[in-house]
Length: 145
Image 1 (cartoon, helix red, strand yellow):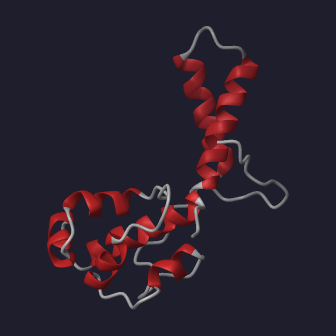
Image 2: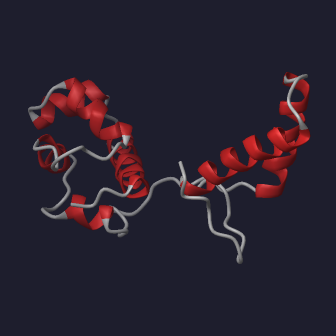
């Protein structure tokens, strides 16, 4: 089973978008799928399961009208059935670094410049890992988080 956090974030985004596209609340989807509201919430949270694929996920997928195997193909990087309804937000990394650095300087009066740069680097790498920031051609995100 795929345990890549980025893959599970993709799946959670696909689930939320599909539910929203159908005009369903989480409670509506839970009722249609025959699962608990907590199960829908967990699926949309996007965290990899600890041991195995949650048995509620295929039920949720069926209630959304997805074909068998859609969950696995999304986790492997394919688009969800029907495609993406909303493009993923993409931000300029340089702008985010500048804004975050200015905010850190304003918010902290005890941190050194090196500590601020390190905190900004960690945050920017995390945003890249989630696909919110464009990847520079020659830099890969730090995988320490």
